[in-house]
Each structure stands twice: as C-alpha cells, then as structure tokens.
Image (cartoon, one colour):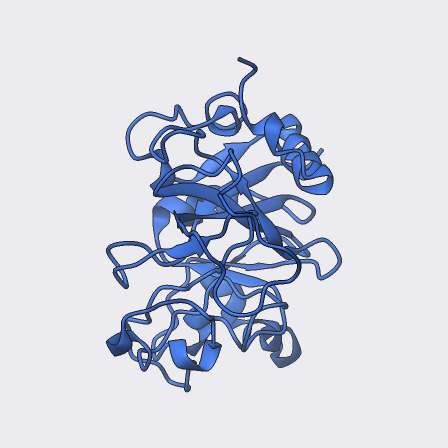
Length: 253
C-alpha cells in the first residue's frame, strides 16, 4: 500500500515577501521562491513565468528556484523535485516507487482572480478557505522510481539525468540536492483546486488531515514541517481531490 509525505513549497512572507494567492473558488497560483544560489545554466525569472500575480515590481526580474517542476507549469515539462535540507530529504528518501509526495503551500486569501477566469467567480471565498491565509495541498507526485541520492544522480546515464534538467538544484553551479524525485506523468499533477490543511477560521489551526491522518501534531508552526501519511491517509487525500470533497478535511461539528 502506498505511503506519502507532504512537504511545504513555494513563496512565503519571508521569501520573496508575499504568498501565492488562493481565489474564492479554490483556484490558486503556485509562486516559487527566488533562486538564491549561483547557477551554471540560465533559469527563468518571475516575469518569464507570467503568473498573473501581483508581485513587487522589483521582484519581476529575480530568478526563480523552479522546484518542484510540474509538467503543466510554465518553463517545465516534467515532474521533478529536489531538496538539500535534511529535514525534508530524510522522510522523502524513505519512500519508494509508487509512493506519493504531496506539495503544500501557504496561500493568501484573495477576493478576485487576476487574469482570465475559467468560468464564473464567486463573490465571496468558499467557506472552507481560511481568512487572510492558510495552508493548502496544491499538487502531488506518484513516484516513478525510488528516490535518488545526490551520488546516485551523478552516476546516471545522460538520458536518465536529462529527466531532471529543468530542476533548480540541477541548474545550480554546485549541484546540492540530497534527494531527487521523479513523478509518474500519469499520476502526478499540479492541482486546479487546492485542498485545505488549515481550519476554516484560522490558517494557523490545522484541520483533521494534519491532526488525525498525518504524523504531525498540528501544534506550533506545523505548516513548515514535512508530514508523513500512511496508506489510509494517502487514500483519503486522493479521494478528497478526486471527488472535490473538501468537507472531509474537517471534523464533524
């Protein structure tokens, strides 16, 4: 039975100073963090991504740390993720081919959708969207192969290494990932609607997906930590996404 790990990704109020938005109907924009290391190859800027997000003018020409890469996302064509921090690399390295990685981000609640909306937009946020900000699952990988250590990546043949070419850690001047992941194209996705990990009334309060189904207690800054899910937790997350059953994220009143 597949296991899962959820890790925090994306822009936040520390870097680059703003979060990505979540819109009234649950659509959102994934905004990567800036790239802070020298790169051996050119990398996209925020302007290149054309995200229809209100970013500070001075940020538009900043290079982005494009990680994770989603095939649906600008400047990407595959599902990859790398991490150089032991706190995330450790639990991710314990996974195997067929297991799941869920990516979650803290998102700011927005009133209007920037750019062209696909269908009607509600006048007010859905009642499951936390006021001001919250933590939300925004995408998933089903692993196409066992996680790779940095040393294992270095000895791959060129065709296998090419799978990771767009990943930010591969493009750095000094390759530094402790773990690299490849997502199965058939069962990996950047979601079109977010799944809440926060309670309805406060972004800092964890809902039952965290407190009952993950390894995390939901106390303290839980929205920054990796979370392990057993097979039942993975099944519940997949079912919520498939059925758009966000009510299942919350305990019965």
